[in-house]
Image 1 (tube, rainbow, N blue to C red):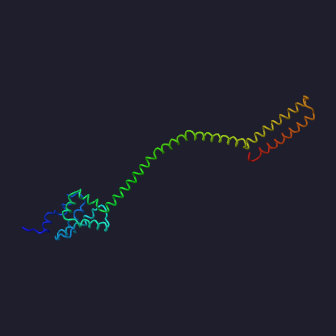
Image 2 (image 1 turned 90 degrees about the vertical axis):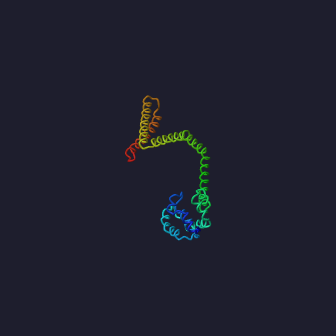
Image 3 (image 1 turned 135 degrees about the vertical axis):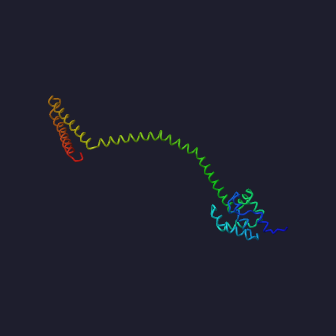
Length: 232
């Protein structure tokens, strides 16, 4: 007629193996709140808890530090059996308890801060999009106008440089010296013809002809030296 509290608790609760298969959360949460309660006098419950604890911890997705585990156990120790059973069967109650844990609060706060910072960075990037479009248009204008004009000017300067280098090259110098030498020879022939046709007197002829022939022979000697030089 009268039943002890310990025997009634054993009959009401299913074995840990069967309860864990029907629970919606990991097995470690099923066994530790109920079977580790110090007020239960039954030795079989504590023995079952000791037997199955290593297997359950091997399936844990992450390692919990001893200090964190002690804090969570302290929160569960103050709850009654009915409250612990409600955590096992009621998902909303379990989530409410989970969100009340300090470690979970810290992680949620960090997650919220990171989310806010990410959103702020995204907004900043979106705010800079018009400026980026304007800079892109300016670059396109520079490529089509200013860059084209600069390239044309550069090509013109390149052509001038090539002409200057060609004009002052040894081969060009020898050719120009040869042309000047031939021109002086023609001028001297013209002065000689003018003398023969009595267009000028002998004094003028001697002065002009001497000057022209001196210039001709100077250029001829320079032309010969340039042609025989190694740099030519």
